[in-house]
Length: 237
Ligand SMILES: Nc1ncnc2c1ncn2[C@@H]1O[C@H](COP(=O)(O)OP(=O)(O)OP(=O)(O)O)[C@@H](O)[C@H]1O
Ligand SMILES: [Mg+2]
Image (tube, rainbow, N blue to C red; front, side, top):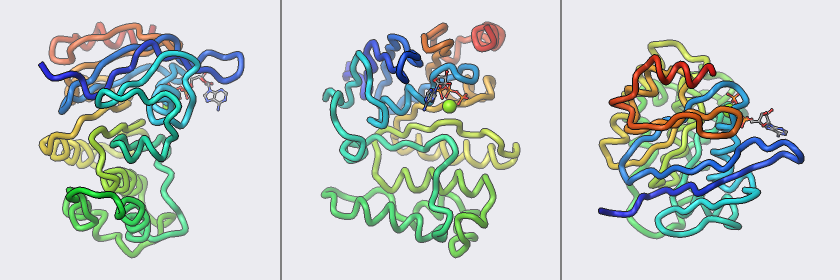
C-alpha cells in the first residue's frame, strides 16, 4: 500500500493562551477527499493554516509526501504542492479576473516540470469565470470569486488542494457548479481536504470525514458508512 500523501500528527495550535487545535491527527491518501466539519470556532481554519504553514504548530507535525513540514515557510509549502483556497477567498479586488489568474500563473512559471493547469483550463472548468475575465475582482459575484480562488490555487500546480468553506454564502446553483468542478478536479487525481458546512454534502463528496469540536477530533470515519444523524449529533454537540 502506498503511504498517505498527507499526515497530520498530533498537531496543536494556539493564539497566545487559547489552544485552538488540540492534538489533531489524520491521514489522507493520494486521490482521496477528506471533509472537515465542525461548528464556528471549532478550529478548522486554524488547522488548515497550520497545514499550509500560515500558522506555526505549537506541537505535532505535518508530513506531506513523506517530508516533514515543520519550520517550512508557507511559500515553500505551496511549491511543494499544497494550495489553499482560503476562507473569504482573498482575491485581489483591484485586479481583473484575468490579472488575478496571471499573477498566480507567473508566480509558478519558473517551476520546472510539465504544466497541468493553465488559465485556459481554468476558464474551461468555469465558463462563468471566463465570461467575467475582464471584470474587476470587486465587480464579480461571490460564486465567481470562489471560482477564481479555486482557479488561482490550481495554477500553483498542487497535489493537495485545501479548501476552507467551499459553499459558505453561495446560492445552491453556484454550489452545484463548484462541486461539479471539484468532481472534475478529483477525476484528475487531485487530493482534497475541505471544510463544508452542509453536512449532507460533506458526506456525499468525501471518502472520509472528521468532525472537530473545540479543537479536537470528536468523530471520524469513512463517509459512505457515516450516518447523517450521527454526524449531525457530533457537529452540533
Ligand atoms: N487570529 C486569531 N487570534 C485569536 N484567536 C483566534 C484567531 N483566529 C481564530 N481564533 C480563535 O481560535 C478558535 C478557532 O478558530 P477558527 O477560525 O480556526 O475556527 P473555525 O472552525 O474555522 O470557525 P468558523 O466556522 O467560524 O470559520 C476560535 O476560538 C477563534 O475565536
Ligand atoms: Mg473557519
